[in-house]
Length: 373
Image (spheres, rainbow, N blue to C red):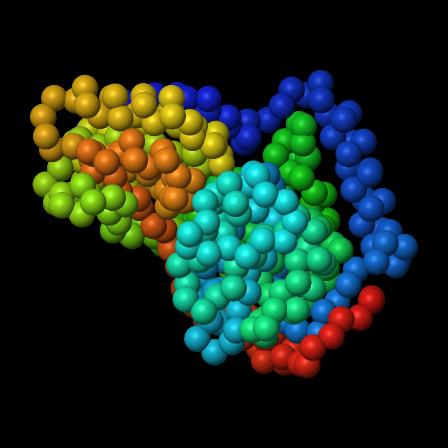
């Protein structure tokens, strides 16, 4: 299998900045430490809402798998409860509180909220001010029974009842440092506030030795009441994203053009290499806003490949940045697919994770209201 990589404005946040920037990181650390203490001492206020609020976040810049883990929780709860997901809507062009639906574009609500819209009965909203977002959700005629905050661990204006922090198996926060010398956006001790730590994107089979090794590294930041789980990513079958793809048998194809705007596309490349003889990869920065020029280069390269056994594939998150936009029409004559991903927990970690989440929700379903902590 021959793998060709075409670099397009690729930005790797995992590469450490120069050691010359360490003093700036130390100053930033001091500022964050003081800010957390002000919340701990009650100088800065957190609002606690009288309904279950689950926060899924991390202390790194990205790439830990928040979206599939949020989807896992949504799938777990939506059959029994009225679930709402609240995000800030990263890189959207709208402002304030917006309810997302399947007719929105990423410019309206962001790419990740569009993924959550596929779940029937789940309210998806965006608001850069989380407190206002929860209040607006509670003011809806069909108000939710619980709210999931997507990527809000570092935002303490809302006091979540259950905090879930993710850290990547191959890039644990314990071996990282604050920006600009590393990729952390919060101090490591903040993880002690979490109720669950999930080590994500690990191997599907984890040896007891490797598990102990990770636990030893996390130990300084684990409290007695915290649950530590391990999960891994599973790639699902390709989903047709246009009519041409629906008329194409992907199993008979030979060449694939993969374009991604995610933090790390290597696992997906490895997955596709098992089915295709050649992969051409166009890499963009995480959450990249595709332009007509970008799409033109991708389609142009597709047309330059000799033969008919060829397809274009992207990630589900990248597909959301094309959905309901004029850019999607550029692929009308090419088979375009996206690859969904799901989360699976190692060993019996899934049972422990679900039990803790479900117990928290059952114990905290209450009437309406909000009070200041």
